Length: 110
Image (cartoon, rainbow, N blue to C red; front, side):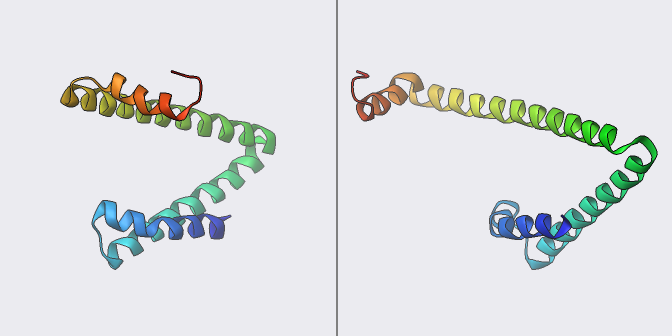
């Protein structure tokens, strides 16, 4: 599992380097911190599974993952709404401009 996660992080490194403006040393810190965090979670999960039962720990993990994903999705949706609203205010109204190209692409929609 740790190997798979570190592979995913490795695939995202070029994008992280551009967005975070870090060098090779910074990327090494990112990978090390991520792999360390995943290893800690896996080891803690094993201890909790032994103590409280596998099913309970699995369901708790799914619940936490779902909650975090929902919070993140709402935050991303809010940011997207703000960006779209900001683009609309700068351009004098985004809705008509957004609907035009979509209607031209979809036959029978306009």
